[in-house]
Length: 444
Ligand SMILES: Cc1cc2nc3c(=O)[nH]c(=O)nc-3n(C[C@H](O)[C@H](O)[C@H](O)COP(=O)(O)OP(=O)(O)OC[C@H]3O[C@@H](n4cnc5c(N)ncnc54)[C@H](O)[C@@H]3O)c2cc1C
Image (cartoon, rainbow, N blue to C red; front, side):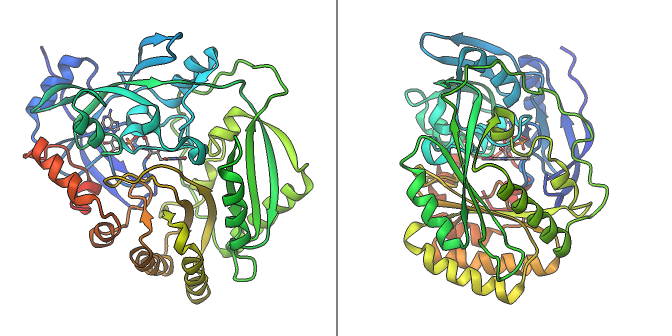
């Protein structure tokens, strides 16, 4: 069989902090995947390359793109199970399952993210307080590894590798197909309720009270443009609507090439403050409760890509942190002190509740999840380095999927369970064939 040649391609992390010109190939048949994998020394898988961190490319690895593997292989309506290829994106997946009033609730926030990418990062969606991460919807998988060949993975078959692969950032080989356990969804409209909050403490209190009692998705939007308005904002609550009949929807399956095209740098303290004021005013004017469509609720950044484009060519910085509840008050005190001292330029501050049991370096636990976006400048880097120290002090878990500047020392001090991952993966693959910029930087 003739094997395609690799191409040169410049990949960038979604936050635009890493650009690497490297080799890339898109196999379209299993045989091709096998032969390419045999030929190359180092590999890494790439889904849609929508990760904020450089997870799917590295200088010395060939990036294997699976976008031609996007078929539904099996669907069992009675048992509510579906087997799909890993290159399928979320919109393609949901367009199929929603027709049957079924879905998986752990849907990360952009429609062109692939299922392989979501599984390899153990992604979560807005429902993470109720449904945890995508791990909870996976029944089994099939992967291909250059040395170990084709392997079936589930709780009953190769359990250890199954566990290493979920959230394993593609280091165990190529996920080729996945069987998901589906859940019912009554319809595709949501009711969104709003609660005004005036401080970080009030926001956390409302999240804690609401998240585990209700059958709804709870998250906040908070201002962080000055010391006086820090935390002022809204807690949103999305409930699947009972009132309307199910309406068939069709999500956009193909990405327009120019969605993410940073032409000018617009975000600065003044513009962020103005945008925040407008957002808050509009929300104050709107009804406290409104009907919203599936696309707006589940994929909040779809159609709002300019939020990212407005960071310009320098890109942005994001950190997502899991905060242990017992030290959250102390953390917030120190966070406010640092905020006052450094006055970082923050474009987004948000909280939600997360659930799960932490293992390896997966981003999940019964903790509060805090997300912060910054403009990319020296002062904000300094502020983030100070936050790293707080992460170590309070055993906070920083997401390696979101923060592309995280260093190995902070990472190793925060994730206590890391040693076990390294032992197991080195045993499974002593040559450590699959590598990305992130896995190399973090010493994984
Ligand atoms: C606008 C936006 C919103 C987001 N919202 C959320 C959110 O709400 N929750 C959340 O958890 N995340 C969120 N993310 C992050 C996103 O879910 C992850 O970064 C996801 O991995 C991106 O999928 P991808 O298909 O682009 O994969 P890539 O970025 O290409 O790859 C990600 C990782 O998966 C591995 N991988 C990809 N395909 C395979 C495969 N077939 N086999 C083995 N490994 C594979 C890669 O090697 C890499 O390590 C968001 C990202 C964006 C851009």
